[in-house]
Image (cartoon, rainbow, N blue to C red):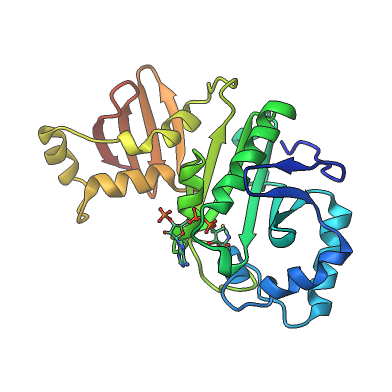
Length: 266
Ligand SMILES: CC(C)(COP(=O)(O)OP(=O)(O)OC[C@H]1O[C@@H](n2cnc3c(N)ncnc32)[C@H](O)[C@@H]1OP(=O)(O)O)[C@@H](O)C(=O)NCCC(=O)NCCS
């Protein structure tokens, strides 16, 4: 579930950055980057058309007490929010202390590794000071820049959805990734399988068996996507996982991650 957060008195430092609560005096810096077309859009919000738009959001940042300003050379050049993750979409995290991270950086500062530096510091704060169990972080399929930030910080792709439509995009797909605190022992089989989906493979004989049921360009890729999909259900029975997705039942060995059988539901 979502853990309570209040960063109104928190200041975190890294080699190049200061993460601290937003102030009304940041308005010009905020508007400067939030008004650039193609920055907020990558995170799902439309760029600001006026300083008044920015002021409304800036006041919300201050009131909500969960969004850091990212300060570089005394200028606010981005934001990093410790957002509420969607508890309906990730019910398997209900007994865990969790939160979602979201971030945006001003365009002139892209490519300098600043966001991974900020995110790593926040992960350290959330795991080692606030003792959270897990963090969620998402990105649209097309957003390789954000995917790279998440990879650099240790997040792993977890659930895929082809239906993330919002105010900016009518139809959009993307990923939720997870990062677990090292002190948290994962026991839920569906979480374990989804976190290890990249290990899925099969034998030559397995390829033949799967090919009798599925007919995709790359059947193993299809199975990986099926496991990651929000709509799949996963149970573990004995030494195997059983994944049900789109009228197909996939059986995977839980130690080797080898696909054993694929069957169509009758
Ligand atoms: C995502 C974002 C925060 C990355 O921050 P950053 O500090 O630039 O991160 P990095 O320096 O580690 O760069 C990440 C990747 O972006 C790409 N990149 C770097 N500079 C870039 C540029 N000027 N234009 C396009 N892509 C660029 C590179 O592929 C890089 O990966 P690499 O280091 O493996 O080559 C930043 O691009 C951004 O604010 N984007 C718009 C908002 C957004 O997408 N937010 C996340 C929503 S999920």
